[in-house]
Image 1 (spheres, helix red, strand yellow):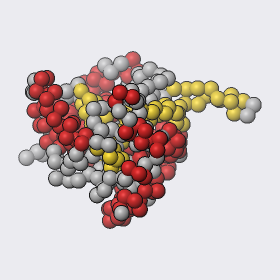
Image 2 (image 1 turned 30 degrees about the horizontal axis):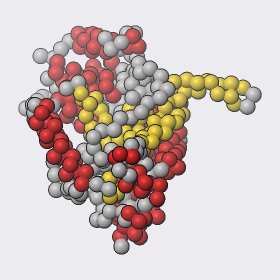
Image 3 (image 1 turned 120 degrees about the vertical axis):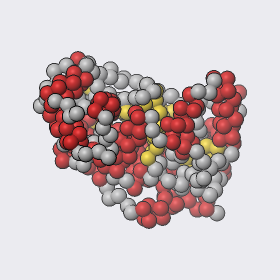
Image 4 (image 1 turned 45 degrees about the vertical axis):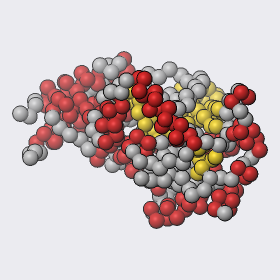
Length: 87
Length: 304
């Protein structure tokens, strides 16, 4: 079942905000890459969290700046992957 | 099975005498060949470049990827740094392979990955390989993960005995690369990115020496910090990142380390130079025999 967009966004925002003080004010439109908030540790953790909670699998080609620009883009990526029929 | 070195060791008589003191001195002489050179790079230039690349790029590129590429290019410029000890002989690596220490998220551990022929790969290619390995490690996938899982199960006593035998053989014999674990040792340089968010200012750092004679060079990038500099009659605040490089006096000397560090620093201060033309694999393999692994001033001697 495809998760609700708002639910998914809330879950991912909570995950990122829990990172620490610097991440506490992240919103769905915060530019995570320009701001330097999305470092390699958080990026890998976020991907693994999404893979585990949504049953997806990302490849290195998916680690595209446009896919991880902000939370809204990440949610779009996840929903897009979920909408692709899997064998 | 793969032989990581060029066919012949660098003749002892061709080594600088000062390095030979360190190389041949007995342990009782309490020699300490470790050299550490700390400098700073222009963080504004590097981060501005990375932001630009990440605006329209195909893969997220980080400072770690930039340092790996800079290290590879500097090793091409200074092939005499792309070496390691086996016993008391110095061997040049056949290829310019660069290692990266990374946080293994699944095991809350540190592991090392290697990008082979890093001098022939673009920043995007290096980044793609690194992300692939980080994801594999996080998922616990891949042959290396199976080896590491197996090793974690070995009791400490037996692990010590295994290390004794393995490193004894590695120190004294020119071994081929046969397994997934020793594949990661097929390079002279290790990069460590400690510029994570929240890291305290790095005033000084001495990179540790992994019990692995391949670990000839170690480059650590520290967190960004601001400093005030004088520019003519004015003061300006600039952002810098420390770059700490560890070298081995049995293999090189401080002057050479300084030149190598200057080359890496220059590339990171002018990161557009990291986009230097990536040679084709045929060009790279032909040049690696003559430059990447063989010291320029020892090229003739190594092949005699």
